[in-house]
Image (cartoon, rainbow, N blue to C red; front, top):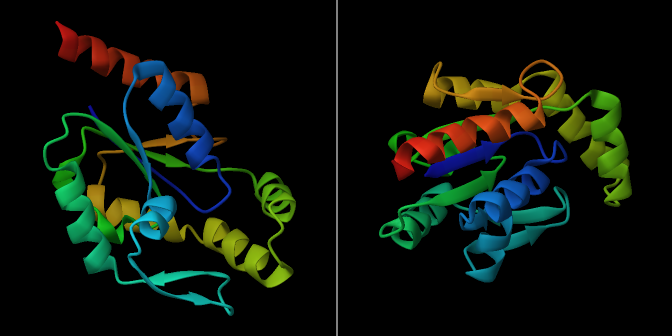
Length: 164
């Protein structure tokens, strides 16, 4: 089972991915950690408070990393580095703006970074990427879509189908 979990930073991608990874025993690849651990970044940006990297470099490395894997969960806010055909299930996570703001504040993000991410959620930046890449072939999880439990149930049903 190959699963993509995406959404604006702070919506709960890593929490959701970690949960389904443990429940279904599927390896979890958190892209930001993968980039850092594999030295795939060019520099750290003080302006953006994040690692700067080339999507193509990460995409190629990731492709090699998952080439022989039957199952994996990729957790990222940037769909530009994944192949459309590489996934059985795609989940776009969303969160209420006030929840997102609180989570980012708790992470220690400065006000500019919080504003940038909240605006991404408000304007549907990640949703637009997902729609462009996967058209209708994805599930929305959050206040305007499936609950966490419903999403887990979909994964379970798909896993059951593969085990038969």
